[in-house]
Length: 214
Ligand code: 2AM
Image (cartoon, rainbow, N blue to C red):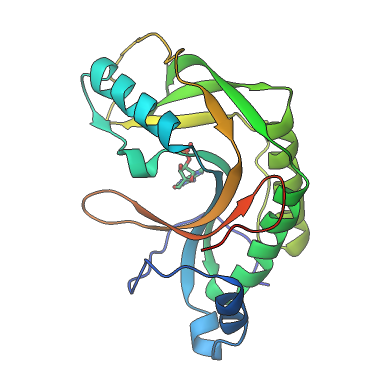
């Protein structure tokens, strides 16, 4: 495995391809130049459609400045890997699958809205601690594979909801009425572009049993 490092490079090509079991095998058998192609990757918790709809309505009502993160980009990041060789994808999928199968259902509760220098986020309470255990497990497995380095600061469950050039100084109430029950995770590929990042799911996993169908 190549040494893990911060993300950066982007790739072109079809970003909509999903790796099911068969495609995992194909990825493993990619010719060497394709295995070395760099892809920007992250593992995340997927949000249910009703949660996304609730958050989107809250964003429309509460976030009056900046670039609102579109519904399809809302997620809870478990681990951001940055640019990795495509040949590593099957092993990364296996790590996320195994950690997810052991995770169980996750309940998150919106706690507060917070801004950093470049984003606005909804900080979440990890009710029962299952999300934090999963993030730790995924990060440890990825680190053991040599494809990821854990950050020094503890993992903070959050959903990025706004992006901006400089702090907007918004202070809305948290979207307290949005319920967040998470039942799946996914590995995403991120492609940066003029209109912002585009995320595509490579494969999703149930937090309770085996991999969900494509
Ligand atoms: P965020 O949820 O805190 O915004 C894809 O870019 C996802 O990976 C984003 O949701 C982002 O987290 C997360 N991420 C974490 N570290 C990152 C980094 N250094 N660069 C880009 N994205 C990062």
